[in-house]
Amino acid sequence: MRFFIVAGEASGDQLGSKLIDELRSRYPNAQFSGIAGPQMVAAGCHKWEDYEQLSIMGLVEVLRHLPRLLLLRRRLVRHLHDSPPDCFIGIDAPDFNLTVERRAKALGIKTVHYVSPSVWAWRRKRVARMRQGTDLVLTLFPFEPAIYDEFDVKASFVGHPFADQIPMDLDRAHARSQLQLKGQSVLAVLPGSRLGEIQRLAEPFAQACQLLNQQIGQLKVLIPCVNSKAAELIGQAFATHAPDVDTDLLDGQARTALSAADATLIASGTATLEALLCQCPMVVAYRIAPLTHFIVRTLGMLKTDVYSLPNILADKPIVPELMQHQTKPESLAYAVAKLLQSKAQQEQQLDAFGRIHQTLRQQASARAADAVSKLLIQT
Image (cartoon, rainbow, N blue to C red):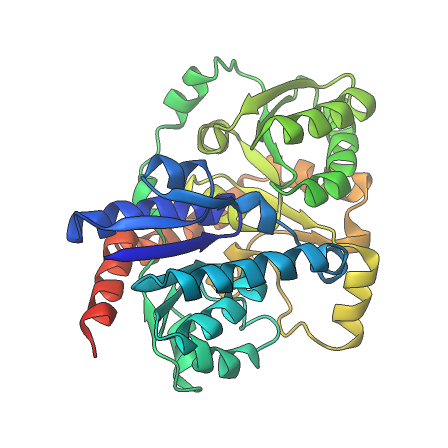
């Protein structure tokens, strides 16, 4: 059995590695290759290309890289034609993967899309197009299969692997001990994993921390960094704009930092789900390129009033969201200070986080592998 898997970012790489482990237990002689990151490689996937080739966010940003992405896609389709796998699995990265899946299906290859695009938020018409190229959609969230049912697309809710990996009863004292933290207020700061996100958010996040330190005093800031380039950009921003703040740049360790922190200032995205599962109260912020924001708003492409995963999963606003022009240092600092000083607000978030965690705790990687196996035995 041969699988080709495409992951588009760090979270997809993590999902892919766990899926490979489960598929290998069902197909011991299986071969795995794909567009992969370090975790998929460690799980035994041959890296056809590095996943950072696809780590791009926003309409304008994609346009800038479009010639390179189109060339990569043509190369991949040609590779699938010359050496067809039994199954192609695209993990997230829908703008790239959905087209490849359509081409792969036309070649007679079984196709799976793991992680539903955010069709509940914008560009819902993609679901109709997915019917042409995707044999199965594996969804992480329970409300998503009903959307696909409307368009006669086969979808299966598998839960989220992060909910399986992170215990329901986290030991915050142990996490703080691991990071040698004392009694001061601890804020985890996560300005994103992509370089574009960091370039837009690191500076206002740093400025907000400087203001918070002046208001609260003895603030400890933990910043998990996904790689050395991210650490360099974030470190420069904090050295320039938060010189008085006691800051630790961590090599990864996001879950440890979130488990240890009293709260987090965090970029909207997958990291907010990890913060939720780590029972870390949060303020969510995000900023995209101005032209991208203008296009999305002008064309009415956004179909939801909330942005962050915790609010979407709770189906109501439980965490503060500051988006685009709202991501001013003063506004960020005010929201975080209010959260740190309000036990009631923290408890409201934590109660909702616990309920969501239980819903998503489904042994996701095993369920995903079972769904793929079932697809493969179908004629």
